[in-house]
Length: 124
Image (tube, rainbow, N blue to C red; front, side, top):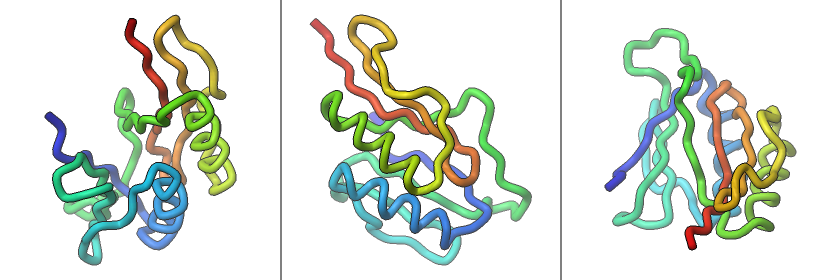
């Protein structure tokens, strides 16, 4: 259902260092890109996350209500992603914890203020 999601950055080098380190934790890497956009994923047929300098060259800003959710696999994986993001300079938006009986999540903002969620969801 989802091909890719794009989020903005004002500093491609810093964003690449952040996402190279963070997404390696879930087996993803930078797959391809150009100067103003880089795509991360685990394979050509899987959903991807792209970081970019906005096409209109206006200031990047995190959208209110916009969030990218990255599966952690399990609770330990969520905890690990959260800790990695914080170690890479992300800011806390909600420490790892159970949010409801089927959802365990953690929230951060990346170096550009984009909101990320790391989660485990168990249905039934």
